[in-house]
Image (cartoon, rainbow, N blue to C red; front, side, top):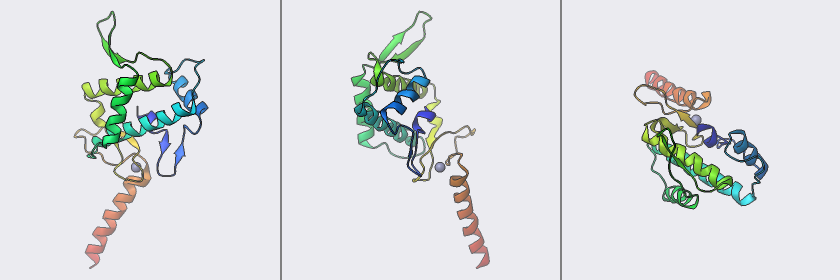
Length: 172
Ligand SMILES: [Zn+2]
């Protein structure tokens, strides 16, 4: 999930899904899309919109509100792909979509999110406090206190700022 959200780097505008083929390759590489399935430009745009809605959802774990448009988008995806519980012979249950293709792949990702909300793992999926970054990261701290992504630039910049602020106070 973190890898999916981080297919865009907001800080410098790097976009892994820059064309339909790159989205198809990414989904196939994770067994989310059949090898023969094609991806349209509209599906590429939909995947990016869902990804950004999931980034917003991870932002909730970092104290940001979830924009209405993002909650609506995730609701619409769940409805459109017919996400529903499936019970396997072993007695485990998972949320799975009724459709294949890109919509089905996005639905499976959403099903994973719902399952991880249920078992408490999702609450550790956060986005970086730096508004220009918002990189997704897994907060492994005991008390769930991490706020910066693991990119040195974000945390260090903040640390440098508070160091500088302290120094300035001391020098006064
Ligand atoms: Zn960051």
